Image (cartoon, rainbow, N blue to C red; front, side):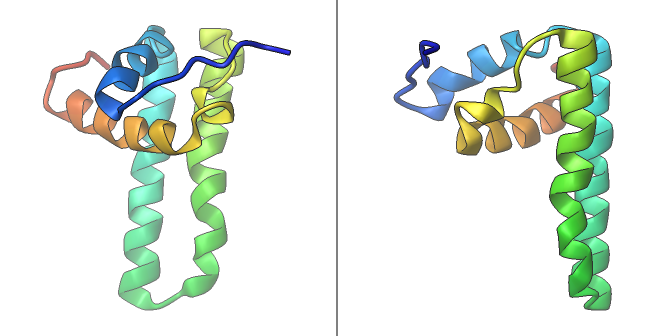
Amino acid sequence: MENIKRFNSFAEFYPYYLSEHSNSTCRRLHFIGTTLVILILALTIGRGIWMLLWALPVAGYSFAWVGHFFFEKNRPATFQHPFYSLLGDFVMYRDMILGRIPF
């Protein structure tokens, strides 16, 4: 069994999350997936097309997992830390937009 890292807070988790996203292609794929999630969610709410909700995890995770398995060559943190990882994705997205993290 694999050792699972324990974190007491998101602030403690986020540096680890960023270390798991050192490959620029992986970060870019995360950015594309998160952008699609935001657009699909806006379309779903704006038009009331609730059937589109199934597309949220497909859009978000497919891009992220391709980034991890083929470019970063690691396992997505989501497997061990699903809630912190989801939050980390949106914080990293914001930090990329603000120029704190390179594309």
